[in-house]
Structure formats: structure tokens, C-alpha cells
Figure (cartoon, one colour):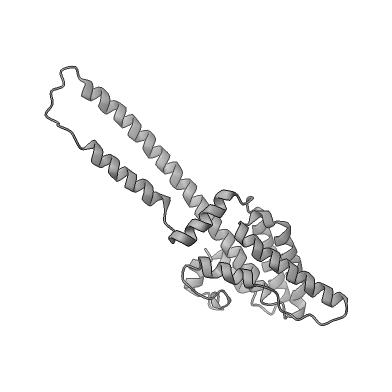
Length: 223
């Protein structure tokens, strides 16, 4: 819901609201941890497998373990009480295994939320870039794009390419203005569009994903 509100604010005609939204995006970018190779792998896996969860793999393994543990002849005699000792050991192993699974699930959930946060921030950057034709918004967008570029290490490798293209495009517009030329008002967002087609779950257009009425599907996509 928060991301939908921030993204919506970039469609405003109020300079203060637009600037406030840009500052919020900058704050969230600064709060991101450094992206790792694992983040790149997770994004690639999401694209290739359609959000296949590690939990599914873990649960499948648990099913196999349960099936295997049920085999054997229960009618065998146990004069030395070895079965009871083995049962205690097995319970301890199961407890350790469950703890490992729980930890793994927590880590996976944290990674998923972090990935969605990065995607939502990229969406906000593209929406802001789409308002570059509005003269009063240009300086705000310049600062926002520069901040994203300065913190580019916080994005995945694929997202970095889009941020680099955006910043290069912003610099071109700045040069035109300094030379007294009219800015074209159009920034390079092709990298963002490629990313959007990759991770948009609802297959909706970024430019129309957040309407003035706070579309429910947009809220879900933006996290």
C-alpha cells in the first residue's frame, strides 16, 4: 500500500507533493542493503522458474523423509531396547531439521520482500522519469536519478543497467539546458521497461499500474 501511495504522488501537479515523494524514494533507496550475487541469482531464478519457492523443495524433502521413516518391519523383536534409543535420536534430528527449515523460510521471506522492495523502487523511478516533460519536476528528477546512481550498488546487476541509462539520459538533458537548448523532456527508460516485463506478476503496464483511485492490483504489485 505504501508503494502505491508514493507512486501515485508522482502523478501530481503539486511541486511539494512531487518533491516529498522523491525524498521518500531516496530514503528507501538509502535503506536498501548492498545487493549481492545471491540477489542476482534470486532474480534470475524468479524469471526462469516463475517464483518457485525454496519451501516447496524443502517440503518435498520432508515428504520423502516421512515416507522413508515409515518403512521397516515393526514386528521385529527389540530385546535390548535399541529401538527406543534410536527413536529419541530420530526425534532430536527431526527437531533440528524443523529448526533449519524454519530458519530457511525466514531467510527466504526476507529475500522475497527485499526483492519486491527493489522492484517497487524501480517502478517509482520510471514513473518519476515519465514526468520529465514537466519543467518544474526536472530538477527534482535530476536529484532523484543522481541519488539512485550514487547508490547503484544497492540494486541487482540487471537493475543497475536501467539506473545507469537513466542517469546518462538525465546528464544529457542537463547539458542541453546549460547550453541554452530546450530539453527534450524524454528520458531513457528502456531498461526499466525490460525489467518490468520480467517481473510484473500481473502483467500490467507500469505507466498505468497506479491510478488516481489506488487500483487494488497496483497495490498488490507494488508491495
